[in-house]
Length: 227
Image (cartoon, rainbow, N blue to C red; front, side, top):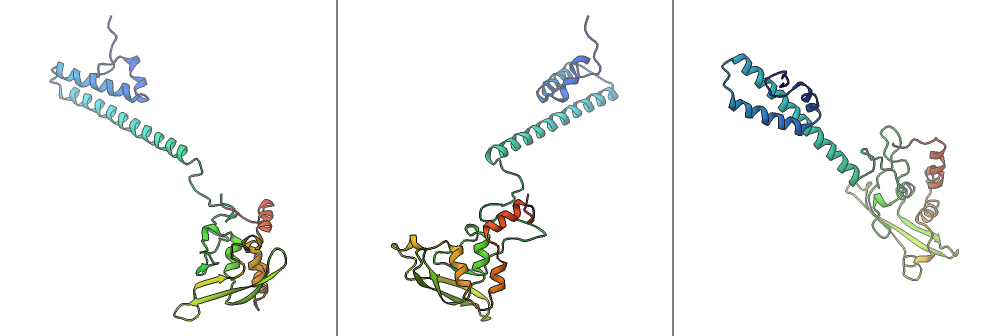
């Protein structure tokens, strides 16, 4: 005996439920139902409207299933290509605290700087950026790692207002040579030595945390970091 159908889609009761979760089954059912339309002559307008409503609902389920499937594929592709967080905290060895909205942020460089290579904000640590921003024009005594001293000069160009720095050049004829490049101390150490010789910068210099101090304070929860 043929099984009774619930509606005019031509599908028995026990085959209709899985269609919600199987877009291919839904599409097959649509094809069968549409094919059935061509074989039957139904003069009942109400019945015809019910059939079209059923087909419209089925089409909506197919579209919804396809959209969700595409979204899931896109998410998996993003996870494969970039397994990091969707919201990038921008924490790194150059910026231990990352990006914060209501607290401290790694400041920008106050002008274009050559030290003597161009100083790129992304490649300078937070400590180095803060120290570079304290530089003033002048000649300073700096020490090699073997305690020999040399002169470092800082030259500055100003904007039209005569106050705002537009370009800074820090250089030494002795330090940045092929024969002496391995004798120079880390940039942060040289900068602290230079700034300690600038009158009026004592408090500002003392306020600049070292990278080790910052890492220690982050570890004990005394500094907020971006998540």
